[in-house]
Image (cartoon, rainbow, N blue to C red; front, side):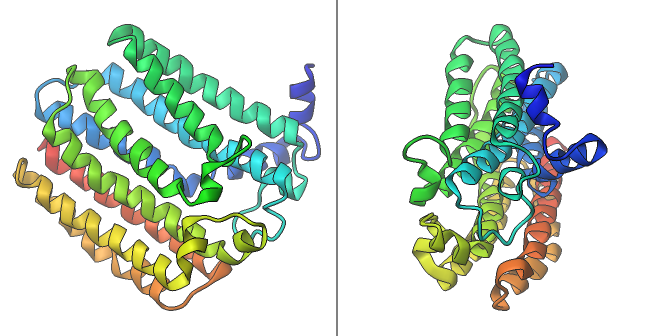
Length: 302
């Protein structure tokens, strides 16, 4: 057994270890990977160019990047000690459920899976995708890793909008159709805004702990009220841009039906909820993101 494999079965063993790692993938954040691929594939279908095999590879890349970022954050925050006062889901390193080396190996393994799928796409489409994939992995690792993690400087939201909004959505449409269309870019905006909303409510929950640990997220910089305003702007902006997509694909109006789900997370965020009380806000935002995204995909493809 290799050292990495030995670490993987470290403090948590057997079925308990797998449950711990499964929880560390943070399933509530996975809609941020699924939605952009669904919308990008819908754009390609609407333009008569959807290649299903390439869309599946794009989904593997997106999910690998999301899970890889979650493992990388677990590792980097754990070794820096910034998870000591965490109120969110249990982290592997900070809780002692796994060694830092094991979680680092898990992140590397998932990133490698995404890199393999991305390389396959690059061979099918264009070598330039290799540079895009490398940028995605670097951005994922440096979010909380490296000597100057940009997530600690309040730039996490920009990363999420670019990579889990624009790059993932437009990229999926591009690998199927071979070109970047205005429809793909426009449809990527509501996708990116809801991905940002997911991060914003997560960081709103962690303001106190992050501030104490010296982690200057955008939520820490804006304060609670400013962060609640930002969250609302992301949610409402997503609906506004979903409506704008209808100017090119009328069926996209069906996405506005998801507005019925918006009052619950918005109400919770503006209720003054803090800390663990905002865990439900993360789940509600993920549900809104998934439903609006899938309805938008359906409307665009219709």
